[in-house]
Length: 297
Image (cartoon, rainbow, N blue to C red; front, side, top):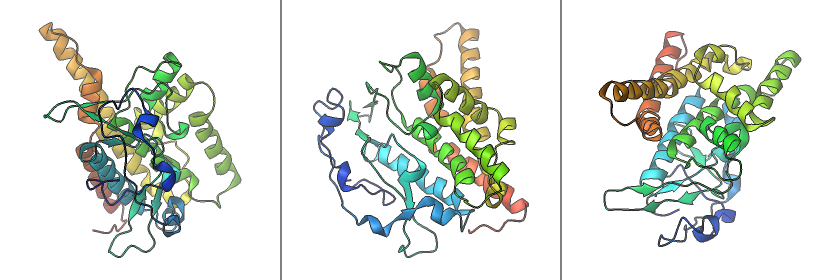
């Protein structure tokens, strides 16, 4: 992956592709090869095998993956673009006080083009949208509904961060196998809304959860993960709903000053950030400690 990649990242042999093959129009003049470290895949285990034993480590997973995605974007100039439940694993042989989660599968990753010495980069608007439907950001789904053959919205880091939210929610419903039949049916209905039907209905269903905290109260979580609902609520409130509130304030200020309307993408990118996610995780940890759950320091 290169010298600037975080150690929470691995790349499989199948991910070794020329960037010109991934996005031929985007990478003119850019470094056209992602170097590959081939690491035996057997050393890493599926995310759910760890979380079902230690549910509270879901917070650590979100924390580590947030850092990994940030480092990929700003140090290695790479967007993953397919953060999903199956693309996050854990290392059973890691030596240390905390479990070590890793981000895998870079088949859909792209390298950004550096436009100037100030670090300005060019985003990616794929001719065909990429990602795994249940974990795709609502904004990208809405764009697919409106512009199915020619997407207009460039994939940005904030979209990978939102995918991480959906991974957390999915983990709380799908990691635990032995659950009551009624709950299992309810979970099946819920996740079906994230991956079946038209893109607009999928986006609407997910937006109602992401931007309306009351909807998250009713999300069907399995018994071992119910106490972690506060994690989803904190992420929704501190990161995503706050971004919406920030955009509304920016629009009000622009109207009052009779200036140009704000760049919605830039406002969202400012609010949906690593710093905001860290704030949300701190609030979630605090909530759990108040409820009597002892988390590792």
